[in-house]
Length: 157
Image 1 (cartoon, rainbow, N blue to C red):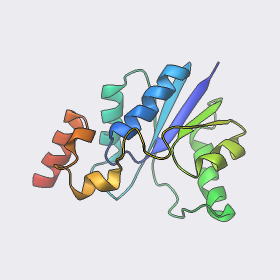
Image 2: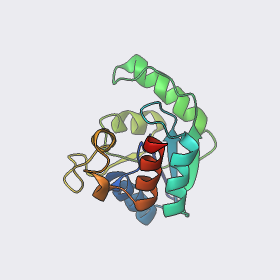
Image 3: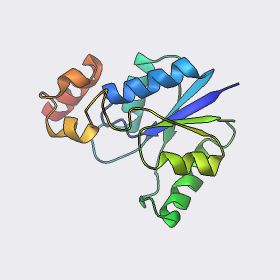
Image 4: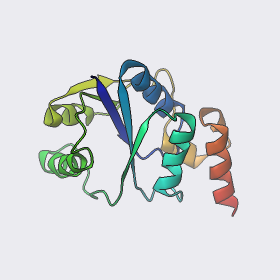
């Protein structure tokens, strides 16, 4: 059985994330999305996970609460992040890691699974959460209506 997963803040969920998730759903027997808690956006991890579940009811959602603050591609940072991630997926026999980030090779290496790079150069969707957070209205074409409404309601209220 092929079991894939991806990780992210999904702050906010956008078309690039959706492209990656859809590829995983299509290619795997089972697919997990791990949603990380973050303070880059004033929307709780549970709400961001709910967006994904509403759009993709077939995915399995795991919440990554209180993640380590140390990030980086150096071995110490990778070990800290991998120990945390391994604890989240401890009983799931994952076989593939879907991502579009440089750290994907470390996740695949440390879990001894296959890495699947998806649109790493952002050719399909030239968007990022940072870009959307900077100007939601200008980038609303890259986000689903439920996400747009939640973001704009949060900013106004």
